Length: 293
Image (cartoon, rainbow, N blue to C red; front, side, top):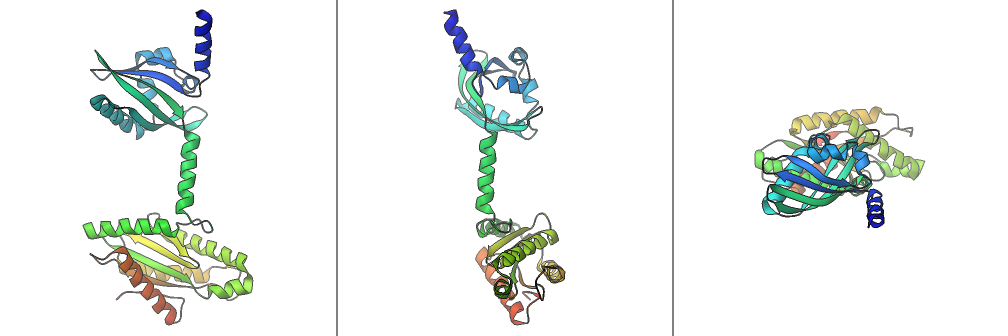
């Protein structure tokens, strides 16, 4: 019935994604025998053209996503398992969009054909990234939280143990922080924490990790850094913070303990040694860095 077919076609065109058939011949050629749905317009390539050759659409993928999609197609074809992947597709005037692809394979005499759907999942990916940031980031200072620090530290220690690469850890504590809160209030104390975190990030390299362990204590993880270089950096950081104007009377100083990872030890032992040096620095007058001999 023409009326029913027209209604079905109109309904499909209003779908937010793309319904498709993707065919791969034995010689590797890919084309879309069928494309429908509202998302087809976003691709910006005539379906008739893609029915002959899928390459104009595939060429638009973000470069590193292309081999992942091809590998997923290969696995699905070889094992005749459902195809499930996601990729990024730059769209004119709309930036880069994340697309989820789900399809079922069906053997054909001249190759393999997938019947499936593609959906724009950019908002979902953005929300996932936001939740990851929340779970790994200290709300107040914006640096890594203790959870992320411990995960990165375990990875770094494992790598150092396997390859004998240098690794150092600093533990930093703001001197007399309780007095700052008592004298200037907790809002000013929070601002001091934010500024100390910022100065740490500005002083360290991009590959280093700054994390707030809790309260006024921070940890600074320095991959591929021997202890003597970490101590030099810690001394510089003490000077940077002491010279900074925090708009509180008597200024702000910090004490820092430094420990270099020893091959064979675990991450908790490394933290304990850095902690001992921190308390040694505080006991010796504060506003200084100390390291294992």
